[in-house]
Image (cartoon, rainbow, N blue to C red; front, side, top):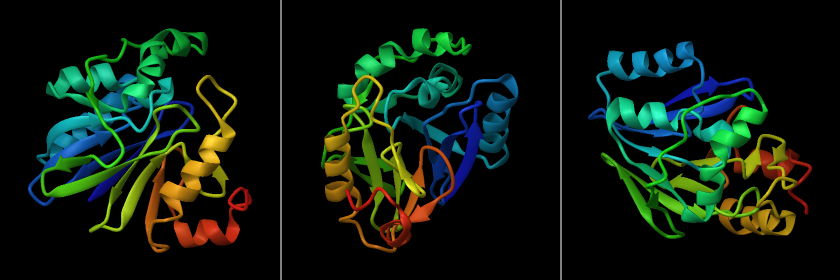
Length: 211
């Protein structure tokens, strides 16, 4: 099961992924304000969930500004592709340029590489590295559930920007071709911003797909 939160002024999608036994992962906790933090705590508490980990699809500040809070609140580790450690390290100072002042994320992360699996209770997520938006972006795919968390690799009707440090348009296009479009067409995509979509829908309508 998946619960979607929209956090901070950039409307970052934070997902709570949980199995039938209540084991859960918190994906991209971009919660910034106290009310946003309280919302995620309330959901976890009211549903008797047990957070096991933070998973970051990449290290941009809007996706990690709640990392320190979540990791300390539940004493859980953070999973991140280590190619994005530079992004993680500069997230707090970079965020401050835009008026977001938050505790630096924990840098002692568990690495996720292409082909790895991350177990969230009874759910197994396959890791697909997807560089381009950042050097260490990843996609998390559940073949049994038929969905994938795509971070800022692809959105409904658009793709991730590549004009920030670590961005590379050619790499992003290659990632989308090889790591997204090779999934079954009915796969539901949960992006880092905006509504969910499917691969079939994006192949028909996304103007960036025909690179």
